[in-house]
Structure formats: structure tokens, C-alpha cells
Amino acid sequence: MMTTLKHPVYPGSCNKTSRIINAATTFCCSIQPSTNNIKVVINGATKEIGKAAIVAVTKARGMEIAGAVDTNLVGHDAGTLCGMEEPLEIPILNDLTMISGSIAQSKATGVVVDFTHPGSVYDNVKQAAAFGLRSVVYVPNIELETVTALSVFCEKASMGCLVAPTLSIGSVLLQQAALQASFHYNNVEIVESRPDSSDLPSIEAVQIANNLTDLGQRYNREDISTDNPARGQVLGEDGVRVHSMVLPGLTSTTTVHFSGPGEVYSVRHDITNVQCHMPGLILAIRKVVRLKNLIYGLEKFL
Image 1: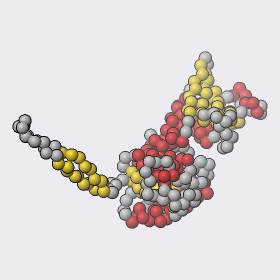
Image 2 (image 1 turned 45 degrees about the vertical axis):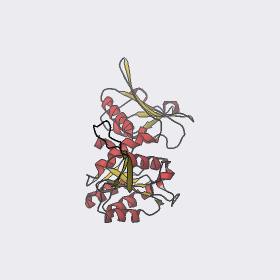
Image 3 (image 1 turned 60 degrees about the vertical axis):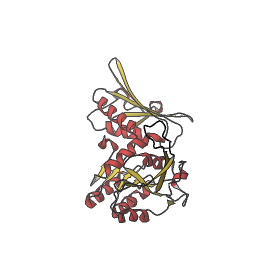
């Protein structure tokens, strides 16, 4: 990209009678993207989180958008699609292989961010690895068997990959706070609110319950065997209960309540929009390029 800067220069002397001579000086410089930047491909680019990721990567230091992949809106400019002031001159393509090959040919460091769906993740990661690209995977409801198979593949290929149940740093901190508190309290309930009823109990609630399971602790012993539906759903084997409230317009909120003699301890996390995932995504992209195996969970990078 060529940039021309024009600025008037007014040379003169200390002599008060000297005339001011107007001269226009033109400076020309060529601004090229840094060859050291991480080349990032967004797979699932037309989704809300994909569009947010394109903007976030464009603004982040040390990385740049090198490709946008989706089966929808093929041919549209990625920047225009995201509402950016200027086009990125990067079209939406339905060809991860071509983009990955181009990055590999330039010998640049590349990362594919996968926002697609559980059924395609394994092939996507293998395809990226074939060209030497690492992967960051944020695909809700991915099967444990897929993660295990990917872990074996990445170990053999010496290729870095992050599979993240969440990219929200606040969500990770909530899980860590709940895990720490679980050693000190015998009663725990998870209460969540969502604007719609899809995927309940939420991934966050399931993850928290899984974290609190098999720690040698049995929660809510007073009524652990009750089948009263008003007491919520038991997650795991150790009595952790979740209560899900659904009302259109509600903020997505997850609260974990603990109680002990004479006190109640609660930790809460609210999500207002998809931007909550962007700081974690940028962190993941920067960290995954150093990996030679699969890591499960953003918390490993915090």
C-alpha cells in the first residue's frame, strides 16, 4: 500500500525583513504488513462470533486476517460484512485448503480459528495441520471422543491446538473461583438465566459441575436423592444441582451459590454480548503458535 503525505514547509531566517517562501514537500513511504504477523483464518466467518473475531484480529497487534471461510455469503468482502469502515479486500471463500496453502507457501506463522460445528472440527484441524497451521477451536457441544482423537493426532503431528469450551476469560475465572470454594462448602447450587432455551443446562453449568465432581466431596446431602423437579437437575455424580431460568431479554448469567454454617458465598458471571470472547481469543491465538500438542481449556493459558 502506497501512502503519500503532503505538508507545507515554510523556510525562513532570523532576519525580520526576509520573505517567507512557501514550498510544498512530498514524502512517500510504502507501508507493508509485517511479515512477522500471525496470519489468522476465521472459519465460520459469517457467524456473529466470526464477524466479531475478524474485527478483533484486525485491531490486535502482531496478527492479521489472512482468510475468511464460510459456506454462506461467498464472495462478499469480510470487512464490509463486519461493518468495518473500509473493505479488507479479503473475500469470504468456501475453501480452507486454498487459503492454508497460500499461508504455507509464504512460510508465515498461521492459525485457523474454528467456529464451525462439531462434525467438521476433526477434519478442519487435520487440514490446517497439513499446511503447518495451528488451530483454535471454539465449537460448543463438541464430543469428548473428538477431542481425544484430536489430541492423539496433534501429539503425533507435533502440532499445536487449543480446544476451548469457552473463550470468555470471565467464565474461566468463575469456574476457578467455584472450584476453589468447593473445598470449603458442603452445599452448592448453580442458577443460570438465558434469553432462550437452547442448550440447557448451559455449557458453563455443565463444565462447573464436572469440575466439582470427583473431588471427594458430596454436596447437598440433605436431599441428594430427592426427585422433586423443583429442586432442579442433578449434574454429575456428587449432587451438584442446576436451575435454569429462561426469559426473552434476560442477560446470560451464571451464578454458583455455596453455603456453610452461618454464611452464603456466591460467584456470578454475566455475558452481555459476543465481545466477551474476544480477549480470550486474541490470547489463544498468541499462545497456540508455541504449542506442539493439544490443550483443552483456555485456563491453561491464564
